[in-house]
Length: 167
Image (cartoon, rainbow, N blue to C red; front, side):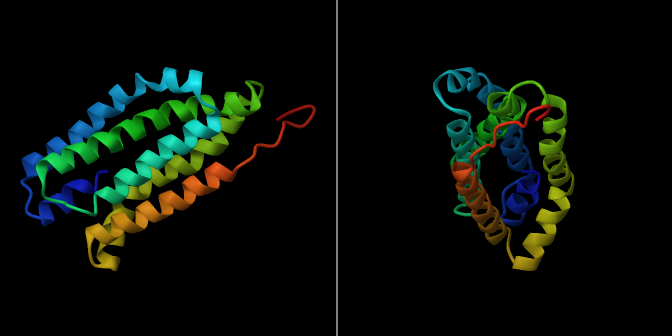
């Protein structure tokens, strides 16, 4: 999402509006988390995962459609923020939902290490990708396609039961 600011400024949006759009996404991360409990009660971990990351992939793709309309940008930023906020809680609960609490620390570390690496390199990689592809919009389309492929993989994933003596 941090690359949203330079993309919007490149499209003629004021830096103030770009900052507000980014900030609203952050605020809705918090508000989105308030609804996780309802999802956890009524949906399987797989269904929650597909829905949350599906919303995030769609919001990412929608950023490519119109990068200058303020109302559109706020709606998309809110959707992206809700998806990101929900994904934080999903990452915290998915391990125990699928494999139980026994190896929570080890499995959470294994699953979150690539996520943290991606978060660390995303701003630079996003700017490089936009330059390589020739536009921010195309970069967001590519990211949305990668996200959609990931959601399809998540939908088809089947956890293996833990082995005796460990997870």
